[in-house]
Image (tube, rainbow over the protein chains, first blue to last red):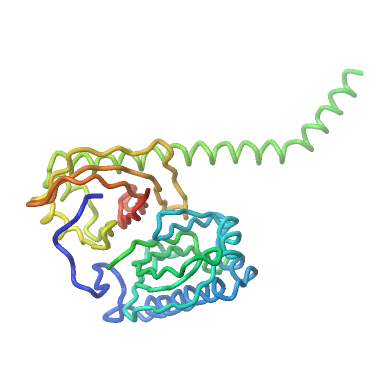
Length: 151
Length: 156
């Protein structure tokens, strides 16, 4: 909302109202692990060009916003996968989950990845990601993914 | 003749009614979504306006206690941090592009997506113009929509 904010909050995702590893209900902690497993799985789909896996991960209404400012719907993401080669990915260990309703949750994490598009020069991105999941017919679907570049 | 036509008409209507009901429901859904889009954008503009007016007290009342904001420079703020920060920040202008949209995630969760260009000055710094793609996640609590997560991605 505003420009450069000089007050930088310390490195860890110690986010207020967010479930990190400490002092959370077992259910929420389990969900945190479940969603992170789904999230890592989706990066695997990207790396392996597993279109069926990605189709079964993204909700039909999914929106993805990458750190370069580009946005993609589900169809466009599947299209992007053809030209996208993910060569390295590292997750920071202190991810968090925030419950927005019983059936909607946001996963927050930091990730660094290296990728090329259309065989171009490899680019490394370090980002703070939020990933919103909605539970529909008993299954968690990714409905919004957004990256913000970090230093 | 008339009777037969009426019967035929009734049969056509009976066949058509599920389609009409579905069409009507879809139209209603679109109207509801359009209304929500405007309602949430009005709330969003309100927070920008409070920022521009440097109305800290109004923002304290307006913002959810568990609000988390992630800015384009990678920093993130909780409500109290943000209120502290705004003491030293001057927002000169902001311009929200008209193509904003709402994604209804569930009955009590909706996400506003928009592009905004703003110019501001943190204390001791030069004014700078930024263009970002922003999402603002709202939840419905006690009958009111409240923003709980705001995130920016730098945009061209």
